[in-house]
Length: 472
Ligand code: GAL
Image (cartoon, rainbow, N blue to C red; front, side, top):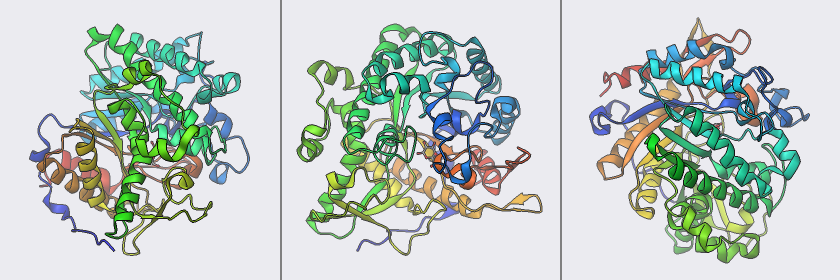
């Protein structure tokens, strides 16, 4: 069994390695923080609807109010300024901008995001804007099955066009999609996220349309908005998969798991097609790209956006029929034939995700090797712990350790030649953690969901010191 290769020393990070142009930020998403779910002309999204189904969300929580960022964004941006980040990653709510997902534009929605963007720029914080972080306009789900229908591609390009036109004079960093893997697997496979579909085939169809919507949007941006001089890319999520043993079959299992997880979405973007191992195993459940689509996809990201949280061991499963094994972020497990496990010695977060900083470094190398050393931005990395307010303070030393050890692993990766250019901590605020509701806190700022007061945790104080170069 592989052992953790080394412990990372919290006090040893050297800010200098990251360089003066390094992008430092925190990340959030619209549905998780905004609230204002039906304010000023916003239309419903699939998450608004999903949250009304009894039993889907822990404690029956909803994003109706969330962190009330809708009304408090100015004060929130003051907190970001105080933290010292140079960038901030947010997402736009499609149904706030286009309540039915198409046709009519809601000017109040445009104004809302204009105000946020202007406020960020006024504070010297560069916005990184994600167009789609899972909150599809409900109308599009009802009309043509959302990501399963073909009309989604044109609708997404049309929505993106509104965003480029109205915000692109000031927004220079665009992310088309956040974690299409989650939309496909959790939304259309396991059914635990909106739109709640349960299927072994639909994840592949949804993924196909997500990839095409991404590629057409990038093409549209490059053809029509090149004068805005912006960058556009996609953010994918992936854990590291460490071979359980040194056997050839486990080494192959870990490679296969990574290709099913990340290669599924990154290979089309870098090579123009799905990994061969997926084609071989999935057969005709996996749609084909036409030659024109392959051309459009290849090279469709200016940077490699990565969300990374954890690591698991991967072992060859040998075809054992275990349909219940949906452990971890594996994908459709029976198609991969990989069993996943964790090491008892690994510390677990409240999500039960293991804290394994060296896995982050290995994944960065895997990406660099496979995709020819692209510029990588970690667009999310973070952890949930049981944060408690004691005499007005939140001492989240577990989170400080998480960030500092993962950053130490990132520093090492940079020294070894990985082109890591940015890092966004997930998350700025405690927020609506999807089907876990408010029960999982990821923020570096604590949010009291009764009073909506924000309190900096120790990790925010640590981050502030770190960003000002006082920890090295
Ligand atoms: C990511 C997602 C975020 C956040 C985070 C923690 O997959 O993009 O919205 O929920 O995980 O679970």
